Length: 337
Image (cartoon, rainbow, N blue to C red; front, top):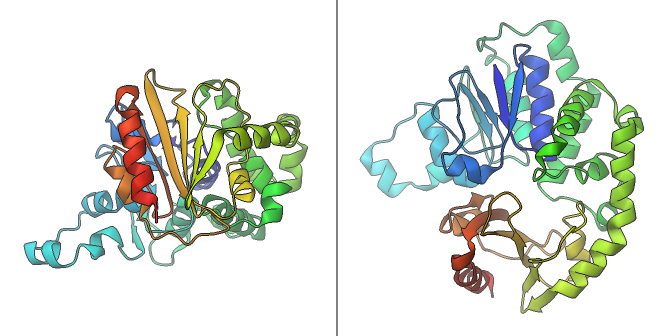
C-alpha cells in the first residue's frame, strides 16, 4: 500500500495519522497538486491520497480543498438528478461532512489531517480498508491528548489562524512547519523522518531531533533576510499586497505569513515566483491577509480559471511564462476592491 501526499505540514501530519492506522503502508510518493491536476502522476489501485486532488485509481482519498469538492461526489459514488445539478450547485461545492468507509473522507475543514482523524475516529464508520481492522492500541494513541494537540496545531497552521506573535516569533509546531518546503525532492528523507516523529514522539522530543533542531534554527536566523527581500520586492496596489520574487536565487524558506506583518493594510496578497519544479513556468499564489481577512474573493474558484485551485481564502496556480503577465494582470484586477 502506498501513501501519496503533499510535502507540507498538513500532508505530513496526514501521513503520520494514516501510517498509524494503516500498517500496510510500505512506500510513499510526495507530489505537488499541479502534477495531480495535470494527470502526470502514476496512481495505482490501493494508493491512499491525502491533501491532494483526486485520481480515480486510488482506493482511499482524504481532502478539504473547496475546488476538489465535485470530485468527492464521484469518488463516493454519489449522483444527483438533473434538477439538483441546476438548482443547488452549493451542495456540490459545500458538501456536508462526509465519511465513506473504504473510500475516505472529505469536508471543508481547517486541515486535511482533521478529515483523516475523523475518518478513523467516527463511531460506526470503522471498517476494514484492506490493511486489516484497527486495534485498541492504535485507536488509543489516535485519541491521545498528544494527537489531539497535534491536530489542533495543524488546523491552526494550515488555516492560517495564527497570531502576530506566532509569525514574528515562531515556536513549536508552527516553527517546525516552516522547515518544510515541498519543492526540494532531496528533502524526502527529512519528510519521512518527520512523519515518524509526528506519529510517535512528543513535540519536545521532535524539537530535540538534531536535523529538526538545525532546520528550525536556520528559519530563525534567516528571518531578517527574508524580511529585507519582501520589503524590496513588494508593492501595495490598493488593497492588494503584490510581491514579485522572480529572478531571486536562494530565497529563504519558511515564514509565509511574515509578509502580512509588513503590509497590514492590504487584505489579500498576490505572490509571483519562478516555478522551481518546471522550466519556463511561473508560480502564482493568492491568499487573504490572516490579520486583515476582509476580502470576499473565492480564491480557489478564481485560480481554477488558470489551471490551479485551493481554498476560498488561499490557492495557487502555475502558468507558462509566456502567459504569465496576462494572468497576473487579470488575477490582480480580480482581487482588487
